[in-house]
Image (cartoon, rainbow, N blue to C red):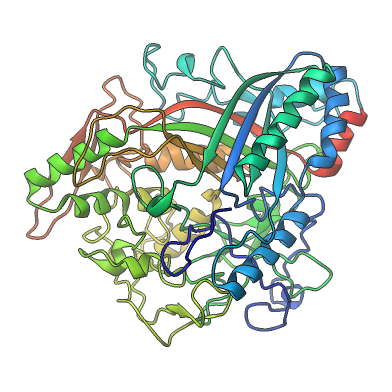
Length: 577
């Protein structure tokens, strides 16, 4: 792993921060089994490690496989099974790594790891369980989108219907109409050479053992180099907003997966990070209930088959980014509006490139705010936050966030979108306490509460990494390019219909969410109509409300698939059967 000076540019980790190596019963580690709403013991020895807590590695290879013969495939899965990393193993490593980084004040090569996980399509599960007592057809999955597969759901996602368009499934490099994958194998490592060694070993096992599977494609990803570390190709800090997850991971009920680091709110991980019930992301646990306050659990979430417990749906999207097209749009449109192109970029995304949210930085970037994970996610849209806990005792440590020390302007309410536009990417994909169509009653305060509870039913655990070399284009000096770069998007959830597809269809792609005429999420939103034109209404000072319009697509789907990441015992059941 590259040694990084944490005082300057530490890549954010796309998961709740790991707890200290030594557990202590304190505010960050309460006894959650004895709380008002007892939290569950997470079976981390059964859950795959990239789901909880996330691999968090710098380098990745995704292998897409097709099942050719079922019986040899089962034998190959049996050989592969010991390599599958569990959440227990990954969490222990992440905690040790973080403890060393905190003590040494920088990333370290003292310990390194290479992890492997697996997920299977619905058709693969049908083939592997056929004729056994665990046959999927006996007790089927309830998520129809998973059973259909992404190609059949492309119209729901707004993908182009023109068969000649790059984003049409006919032209996808993997997962399309001609190359749907049955299995995805995820390999991540701290060191690229170690990654390639593990991938070579996997490929050799496929060829030598006549494994009954064929390799369709490989996709390599990694964090971007230098000053872009932790950012995506457009140049914006990524992975800031992830849900916290309730539950403890050992016999000690204070050994929580997500430390409670907000001294003003025990229902947060870090400030602004809502704690959600694990059934939203892993089957067999209680999930959220949109009719109750966020901190109260709902019913246990089941997938259908009993053996799906401790598993999760995996969504993959290969998203090519046209960096030059976005930068050109921002540069030219900002000139027409008489504002800085960097400000327009922040309006389109909802954050400055540093990660500083518009709600707490206004019209001036504040890089220190962007890098402060006690502050950069702590804001709402409907309500003002007058007493934010901003800093930790040691930046980057697991100490409590504090109301003392360096502070940043608190977030005001922004119901109309004067600061952060209603079409901004981060607001469209996570509306927080905005009033949404789910809001009930006539009182705006009550509508906000019910909307916020419903919003948490549509969250995702994101585990993506960029692919391709960085572009030379910048917002200040755009350069036309159409290179092969983008995001290997991976998310985990327990309802593809109500989480990934909902956020795509009813938030990002709906020009009338949150209000009529709001416009599309210009970053990832897709207009399923024939023109593909996207518009958004930008509110500026002086009652100006220009309409932004673009026919260019800056994020183009070029691959994808819906998969299920089974528990360790379920995987064993499949090859034993």
